[in-house]
Length: 229
Image (cartoon, rainbow, N blue to C red; front, side):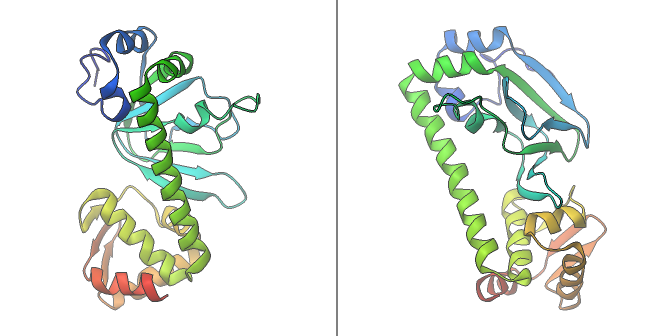
């Protein structure tokens, strides 16, 4: 899958759709197009970003590394990696990725020079405002996740994760690329507890889970579990 140029890219949206032809040409002059195979690391926690990574086709997981990884979110097509990190240097410190991202399936991305991107953001007011709005939306999603993790028990967290996946993929029948371990890390719940709760939900006919195929059979009950558990 090849993108002819940033100017002619059919995937561009958000702040890229507000850039001038000259600005898009500047980004395109040093653009790299990369295919990531399933399991490939797209960026590594603790490293310095050199590019804005535009995931234009594929699916990836964003996670914080540790003794037990903490899965923050799932990225689908037309998402960006490194936006927050690229401007996290106001204090004079070197910007760093505070998370890792790995491909959950074969994925395609364009890598855009971070310095060129910063320059455009500094001079194009409309682009700058849209970048700020994008960063704020990410922060808002993370704060909602912290709220769920801090206030819900494992049943509530698993219910929230399943509803999140349904909303993310816009379907109640999900051909998942995630493992049970991924669901556990996304819910901040032990793998043993996750498997047990998923089995309970299946027995209660709230969900159906067959291998990697997940179907939400009763979203109202799942929502009630999320609210009350």
